[in-house]
Length: 121
Length: 107
Image (cartoon, rainbow over all chains, first blue to last red; front, side, top):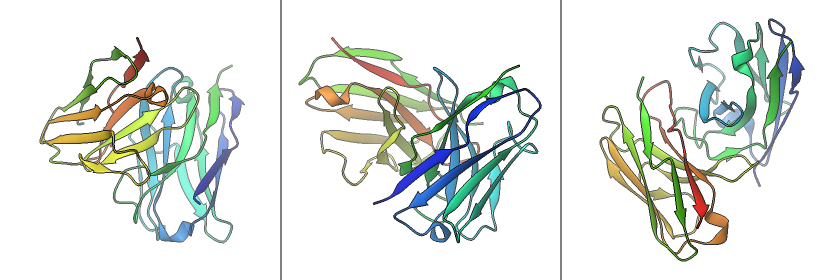
């Protein structure tokens, strides 16, 4: 069965960096698109980034463009989110989520349990 | 950006009731509309995709309808595990926005 397990969250100072990881199992990472979606404490959901099945198409929300980088290692079935120049407004639970297809559906059929990132001095 | 507006923001109901949640898009999204359920402290779960298609494994008491700008999620015969927050999401255009959520509480 599909399983997604995020890690790497924690408390970080504004302006610093953090890398989130998502270990995927139960499917072949290289055959599906993958997303990051975040949720600020007590708030709604915000799509953050997508990497298509072949790794050749990558898109970001404007709020993180130029600061965050999505990547993957298909040999290890791992998805990553590198977050630089972090701001207080990046504080959220970050979920990795599987697309039902190549990445172009932009719907999230499986989710991890989430990892909390807190940006605070 | 396409704005997604849900109503009501919160809703009280009893086990066995039938409830409806509405989602309105700021422009036409045809049927590029998905519904998610989120229980407290848990990740969201996909319920309905493309406006009216039931995700595999989701009970048939959940149903979706609508097209264009107006959509509804209906839950029939409410069960205790259905008390949660529900979100709509459009996947027509980037950014792929969500509604603000509707919290379904036990009366």
